[in-house]
Image (cartoon, rainbow, N blue to C red; front, side):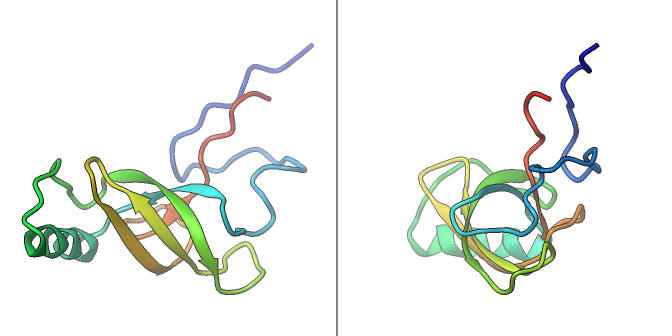
Length: 113
């Protein structure tokens, strides 16, 4: 009998699986990044510097991000992320670890079982 697909919220533990989540972050993988208060301030400064109007951001908001650098080969290795914001701009998050708190990244929920 097949099991229903796994649906999880960001940061919730996933069931054990041979392929998901990957054993360690790798260049080019998509993850979710949760903004913290310092990210919000940096994004506001970045937008003010170029007079850009875009959707507001708040600490705790989650955005898709692309891993552009990995500092290590372990599952908890810090990563640099290119975060896609809701608007024409992006944000570069540096040396971010996997977790559930603001200022961390998480694997997307696994689709299908």
